[in-house]
Amino acid sequence: MFKLLSTWQRTFLLAVLCWLVTLVVVVLALSLAASGAPLPIFLLLFGWLLTVGLPTSLSVVLVMSLWWGGSLEIFSLVVASLALVLTLACLVLLRQIIVPGWGTKP
Image (cartoon, rainbow, N blue to C red; front, side, top):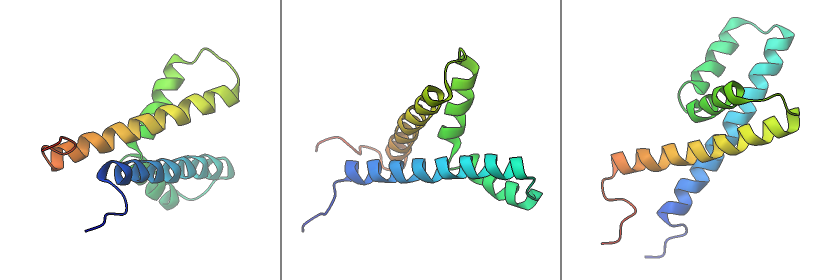
């Protein structure tokens, strides 16, 4: 049987997809907060950020606590890079918990 993508490739694509969606949710939440959006919208957005987007949320908090005050572009790049790494690590660890022995050769 021919497989289109390996398990590692599917995990990486899922991590990138979750990462991109979470970055969009963060930008949307910040822009809606500036415009005074109603509370139910924020409950939905923060629900995403505290579940699937937790690695991205943690990377924002971590970088903000260690940031020395450089430019906004570098800050955004560091947060986005760390968020991708944490999202991929979380999905790999979750896959290891769900399917023991995943990623090892038989």
